[in-house]
Length: 479
Image (cartoon, rainbow, N blue to C red; front, top):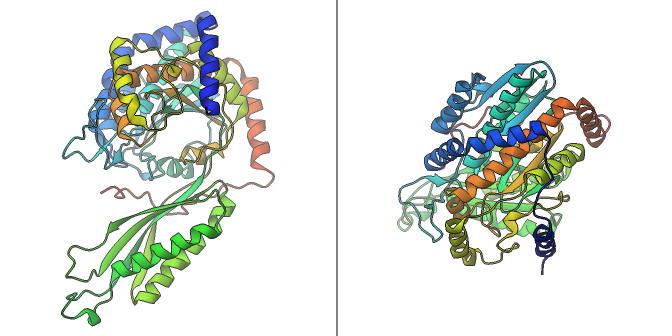
C-alpha cells in the first residue's frame, strides 16, 4: 500500500464519521453560492474549449471565449500582451492589493479522445485537453468574476486580475509575460491545476529547457550514390546515442526526453534535413545549465562526425516552482471548507468503467471526496508558473477533475475532462480560489508575510534572468 493510498483510506474514515465541512462565514458562503449558480455556464465554456482543443499559441477561439465572458462581466481587457496574440489581461477594481489568477487553455498535440470511459480517439483532430487546461481557464475565470461581484457589492479596495496565459505545454507563455513586466505590481498569484485528488501543492518542480536541434546534410540516391551524401538523420541518431550515454553520468534527478520530429521522407533518399526536439529538466537552474551545455556539445560533435551542420532554436525554459507556505496554509483552510467531489450514479458508473484502464492507480475510487493535507516536496513535472513564483508570492491548488489514479497527459484525462466529473472539480477550484482571494483582500498582513517568505526563499542578491534570454515567443512551435 502506498503512502497516498493509506492517507486516502484514513481520510475517508474521517469523512465517514464527520462528513460536514466547517461552516464558512456569510460572505464566504455568498461566494460559494455564486460559483454554484454558474455551474451551467462554466460547464458550457469548459466543454466548448475542450472541443476546440487548440494547441499552444494557436488558441484563438479559446482565448476569445474567455475574454468575451470577462468583458460581459465588466472587466477591462487588454489583448495581445507580451507580443502573444492569444495572451490577455482582464482587470477589475483599482489600487492594491492586486490579486492575480491564471487561466490556461492550450491542448496537447497528438492525443485525442471522446468523453468515453473506453479508448476512442477522434480521427483528424490535432490534439486533446489531456492536461485539463479547458477546466483550468474556466475555473479561474469563474473565480475572478465571483471576486469582481464581491468587490463591487462590498466596496472593498483592490484589483482582481486574470491572466490569459497561452502555451503552457512547452511554450512558456507565462515566462514572456513575466519578462514583459506584467506581474510587477501583483501582490499574490493564486493558481490551480486539474488532477486526480484535492490538495494544496506547496511543492517545487523541475527547471526545464528545450530546443529543436536541426541538422543539415547532403541528399543523394541511397543506393546509387551514397558516398556523395551526408545524412542529417545519421547526425540525429548519433546525437541521440551520445545523449543516451550521458544518462549514466548526470545527477539522478535529471530528466531528458526527445522526439524526432523530422527524419526524412523515403528510405532511398538520404535525408538532407532532420530535426530532434529535446527537453532537459532538473530541480536546480544552476545544475541544469552545465547539463544543457553538454547537450549542445553532443549536437555539435554529432554534426562534426557525420559531415553535417547543426543549429538549434530554444523553444522554452522554466524555473522550478518556488511555493509559498504562507499562501498555502490559507488556501488549504479554504479547500477544507469547500470539500471534495461527489459523483452521481452516471459519473460513478463512468469512473468504475474507466478505473481498470489506469494500470497502477495510487488512489482508490472514493478519494475524490476527500481533501488531502497540504503537499510538500518535488513535483517531477515542470510549469511556466515557476517563473512567476520567483517574482511574486505564488501557490497552486489541485482538485479532482479526473477519476482517481488518472495520469496527466493521458486519454483518460481527456475523457473525464469532457464530462461533469471535470466540471465538478472545476467548481471546487473556483470556490477555493475565490475564498482565498477574499481573505487576502481582508487581511493584508498575510500578503506581507507571504512577501517576506518569498524574499527569504530567493536568497540575498537574487536577480531573475529568464532561461529564454531575449528570444521572441515561438508562435509557430506547434505548427
